[in-house]
Image (cartoon, each protein chain N blue to C red):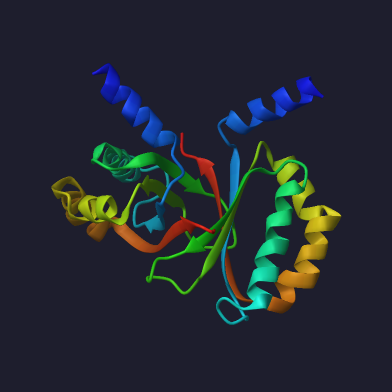
Amino acid sequence: MKALTQTQSLKQDKKFMIRHTVIFKLKYLKHSVGERDFLNAAKKLAAIPGVQNFESLRQVSKKNKYDFGLSMEFADQKLYDDYSNHPDHVQFIREYWLPYVEDFLEIDYEPLK
Amino acid sequence: MKALTQTQSLKQDKKFMIRHTVIFKLKYLKHSVGERDFLNAAKKLAAIPGVQNFESLRQVSKKNKYDFGLSMEFADQKLYDDYSNHPDHVQFIREYWLPYVEDFLEIDYEPLK
């Protein structure tokens, strides 16, 4: 177990290859129970294998219409694809994202050489 | 000098308070000299006081129209405001951003409690 933990820790420190982010606006009222439940469900995406440096964020610029953000990193494209196809992600999309997200924008980054 | 370096290092590790990001598309052709000059000028924004964890990024999602991103963090709103008003930032906006950016979107984050 110790060796595994160390490997995971080293991975976290590695320069990211792909950072997947999404900014979004919910159909729920601000500070509603629905909003809280949605955000709690989103946080569980962090447990899907391959996800590094997961962050739940509040979007605070007044120059766009979005209220929240999620950010996560993957070591390579295969891990990103595996995440997208993972049953827990697919279930989150079906049960929370599709019915309760009003609008969103996906933004993915790679380091600029 | 050693104490200062240590303080700076601690600051870098601190949980960010405000992350300022912008995604953008240039008027320049891809891989042109103009593009390279613009990105080199943008990287110098990292030297403005208060800027932490500066990143130059390539935007790679096909679900939006932007090609590049910049990300930086500030410990508080005053440091963010000071950055915005700093002569080097103002000069960058005037000499590079206004003439050569075709379109952009600003996204600012705070940690979600």
